[in-house]
Image 1 (cartoon, one colour):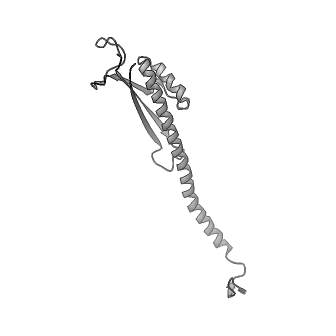
Image 2: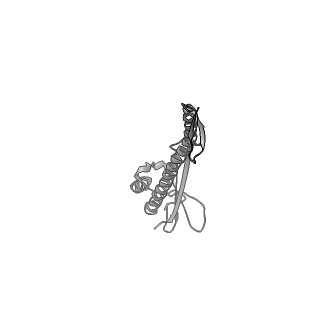
Image 3: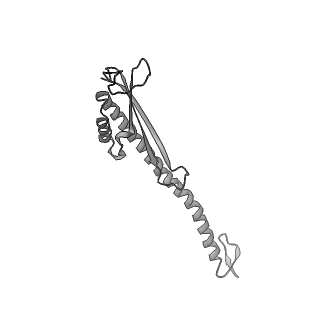
Length: 160
């Protein structure tokens, strides 16, 4: 033991060689605990930003698909192409879109395609509704048990 002057002029006893190993071990434990929290916040923020961006892109794609469906409600390829032009990174399939038609007065859903009971198919001022589901996967799958969420987006408009 060596006597040394402390900060405030008091004598204090200091060990020769010190306890360096205990201090290093304490720092490693503190780093392990705080880094877990910081990484969770970091990846959670990235996933939240991706989710908001994807939801916005999906909303825009469905809105554009609905606009196209008011012009050509019987053509699923044109509807898909309109959504792809608006939001190409989503890679939506034609089968991902559900297009329903009905009138604003009653809500009996019918097909937009011409049939024997509805030979005209869609009439002017009918309501067209376009819906789609989109699976969203998280980056940090180990942080949350549920790694995939499904976004559902629907829009409706009048046929011109």
